[in-house]
Image (cartoon, rainbow, N blue to C red; front, side, top):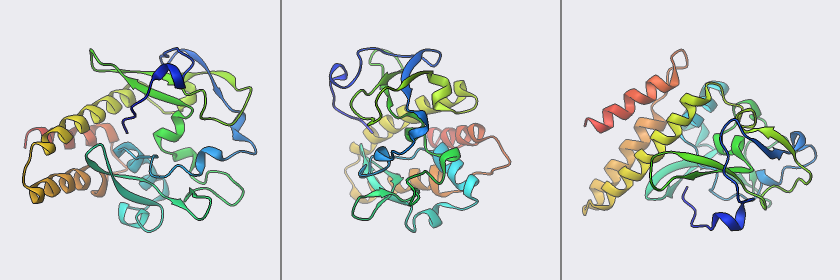
Length: 220
């Protein structure tokens, strides 16, 4: 999700790489679940999130649509996001004790928080930055970025993140050039179905499956 922001107003003014130390460790969020409530539709899921959740819970996209995720327009694309429930709008996966019920398979945005990604303007790539006003926990300790993100094979994951980000940008631009609304909807639903609804094989490497699907679209 794109945000029109002044990076200097929301960060500590630094950019980080995966091997840098950053004050992001909030001590296992003990006694706090503020970032799991009132997030609206901002916890957007990418295809790896969907793979991780569906395989981890042994479920599928359609089941998750029954009270756990919902669809919204995000920067010109139809994408799923975690659903917020009740008066306090808490995440559908948050327990009554204020703990994440899918912590080991939580989405990338949740793993990243309170870090964010800043995509470069002159070349393809991104850096991490620390959102200084978002996390309610004070006196956070330093942790290496790659440890905080807690995702195996980080290099391949970061490549996937870039591929997906720029694919969405390019596809959204192409859709905006289509004048027929029905044709626009067909393209939007094709992307949603190919990358989210069609299940991934849990016995196979996700990144290879994603790459095959990405090439399928680019060569169509």
